[in-house]
Image 1: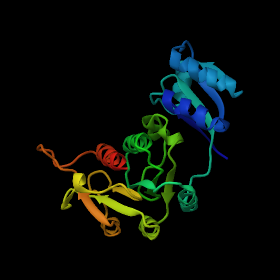
Image 2: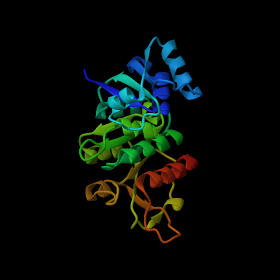
Image 3: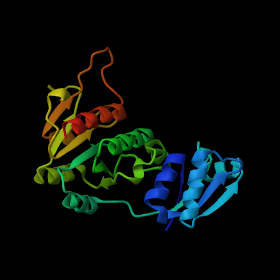
Length: 244
């Protein structure tokens, strides 16, 4: 099984707290000994994980020169979650499900930000189509600041079919569209709900829209016509969490 690298202070700290069994070894930049790094080293030692101190150039080489904040973890890959994991998760919930569906979001920074909002507002799982969507990359994990380790991210083969099966479970699918007639602030989001967000620029695909129970919009007061998908996601999730 292939091993991967995860970098950044928050993702690695969350990984060591939530899934330390996946971490094979930890690499720390020579001379980097601030409180955050020391806490990560302490967590690694407590779990019996080897910590190696290497220079900046070696660390850069491991992750292709991205901003790693002086810490890189070599982790054991795990099998991605799938539709079966989604149904198992829903069957185990003791409260009305709260889901986020991302329809072909392709920017890892947007995915990471959406996961961070999902964690903040109590989303049970984030669902996305396997095709034409960004995967849970190290960059997305870094932006998520640890949320990628706490919120299940579930790629599905056929998003339209998954949406229909969610409706059969009496989960209300609320799609977002700039041209929708109904206002977000006039929408009841308190029950079993899945918020459906579209891709950057084009929004929801036609078939995705057709499988939504309702389309709503964020009322805009200024001259800007739309918001970045991760910003809009945060607004919708906050409104839903407040109603719940």
